[in-house]
Length: 159
Image (tube, rainbow, N blue to C red; front, side, top):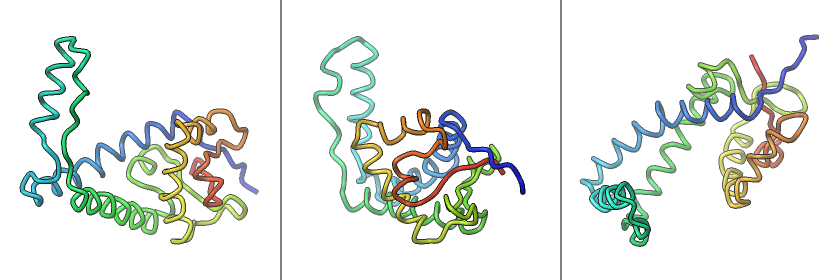
């Protein structure tokens, strides 16, 4: 039997970064232009950035207004595209594929189901809301599973 090597925190972090760059960012740009600029107030982001760069401690006091409808469309689009990649590339997104890691069922080490994919995506919410502890678990656990992996019954391994 082939030796299983678990993908740790940093390789998964870089895979997520690449997914943001090559998957979420293009989707975000398309959604922003489809919304006619109504998704969020980009000028407020620019103003906040300029204030922060000048050392103003009140740079984040006023947050840009966002449209829930367009935000929901963005989140659902990213979720659907991610699941399509998982389905086509047997548990890998572009970032994971590039770094040769993939998501599999934690018990069988076979491809994840659509139910696991959706559960895992939604389980990012408690991983984030726990002040990131759900992600930090990846660095601390021997099997390198985060809270979202435990909830969905998945594990990330090297191909």
